[in-house]
Image (cartoon, rainbow, N blue to C red; front, side, top):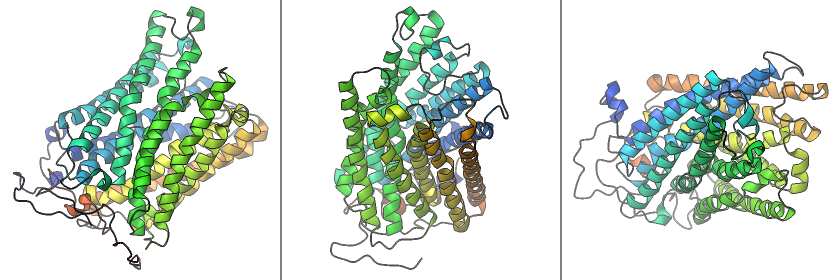
Length: 547
């Protein structure tokens, strides 16, 4: 177990639970406490998740019939644009790094805070401004170009896109500031004795994600600004009518947006690494391989963007190169999956809510990854490109896996964040609805895409009706699961059982401080003298417990 050895010099501040002190609104608006900033991200991204879910349900209910159902064609285009922009830029990219990266990373490292607390506060305000501008632009201007803003349509649509594009540009600064802060924190604020091979795997995942955020995000910022400038001034960057090249837009957009897949998924992988050790109560199998594979995914992700462009007219050589590189990502992902399963094998597995999300994550990641290998095969992608097959694959990886990691993180660290326990029975019920509902929503879409239904279309052929109704029914079950989670977590904030400092009896520095942690995390400077997942010594059997 990572030990908290008392050193001679104590921190100057007394032990105070931050959640009970400085209750005024001003204390929250100007806080430099990474934990409070995490809770601010929690509120903002939860609102984004609710909005994105409402827009998704509107799209699914529209497809209850082959023709017009509850909205017109223009409204439909705006709804799926709202859904895509909100879910990707306002929820999936910032959620886990913003909430759990901010809350847990300094605790896991034994630090009092992140390296740049003021920059951390700035990042959440920049996020709020960018989100407000993007939402204002979508609602007031009728944005209808989808979350990809593909040229030349995004340059010719009568909808007002400039506020949305500038909103995405501003959101990019929040992502960069957060990533930079995490990189410096990991390098400079680790507790004494915490070598690189003693860093928790969640921190490794956040560190790899931060590298992508810093290096790739400026590209999407520049691309969105170029589209906005071209719309306003008529420059010829991407519009062929003015000498521009729409394929150039695709290269610039996907150079960011493919690594952005890993900005979303890598933090979830880090959460699962922690959750697997927690539920198995066992040393992590292949710690180094899991850690290095996070860096491998971050590196290879920068060179795989062209598999989104197999039908854009790029050469056969380019298509083949991008296909091979894309498949290398599967190698690093498979390393993680095998090591997670190896950790679970013969572990003393606790049948708790996080376990359901681990199982859901493994299924979505493996199934979505296998279909990813399929769409990275040029001959198959030509058939499936711009069909519902790609929509289903996209959601299995980018939504299913991310949501599973996000919900696993909430249930794993909720007691540490708020000092209260959620209701385990309702947690199991809701998690079952979530996993079953997600499968019921998107497995029919794989079948729809394989049968030829295009994505983004307002109407569809009558022969696709049954599968569309099944998908909408699944999404209703999924939404019901989220409503249950929202209710019992809000209830637990005041009425849940007191959690105690370490309710799961886990290893790691974050579990060796109070729940919630004091303002500066630790009353004494922690030191680390063992690996982060030492549940048994070498050669010892796993201690089996009855849950």
